Image (tube, rainbow, N blue to C red; front, side, top):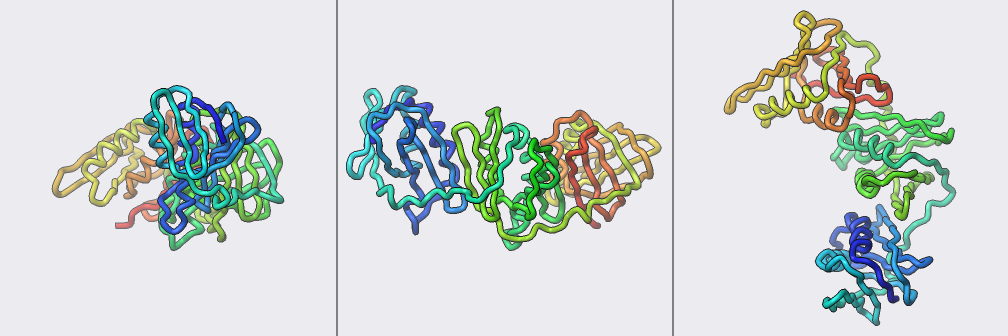
Length: 366
């Protein structure tokens, strides 16, 4: 193999595939990227046996070929080179790189040892705007459970029905759900549970790119293809809990308040609530205020009054302020709606005027 490409193109390509690679002692080939010439481009691939990422880098192909090389070594080297043309040439068990006055070589492993990147066969396909799915994922992924003893909630739910894609995540203390309208009226008889790592890598690789993401699914795998990149991932085996039945439909109080003001109040109060992460939220119909109370025996206390529109009863509840902030910072509407069922039942937070998103939070019981 012999190619010439720019340092920037190669750097970006390696960055796209390199984040899923973790140091493997038992399978050293998993520390490597596969570099292969294909259709006048350089195909760069990586895998950790759960996720595989492939991207294409523009280059001038002088000699066809394929090679695998340690990703970290190659990335570190390319990042240190000037933004000029780089010549890569494979020779026996080495990959040589030439750039201006830089002359280096990296040891390689046989390409036939690299795991096969799977194809998603017998699949169903739909498309969705790249920025639309990225925003939706950012609004739910933080609610994924980190408890690996419950694998079915350690991922993000994709549910396709009646031309809608429902994306949800929960750790049993909170729940985030976003609904997206699809151009295709696609239904799937089974739910898809995607690993959190897949969601994170998809969002990172989309970045600021526009265009459409093509999603292909079968019973065990999913792939996302956009621009020059494809991500293939296994699905988590299991049955996602029927969370819809815990979403309340009746409320004793509804509060309308400014989103940024609520964020600022929670951050200020959080200074005094580091030990237990709790905030007591008073909703006062008489004074039309939300009042945030936090207190630390060692540090002090904070009271933040937020002028709001309160409809219904007055009262208070205690919640985890981190849970509220993670939701609020991923919304974009000026105002949010807090729907309260009481001090011992879940409450809902939604963007004002947007019925496609909901966030459910369980209270902290005293």
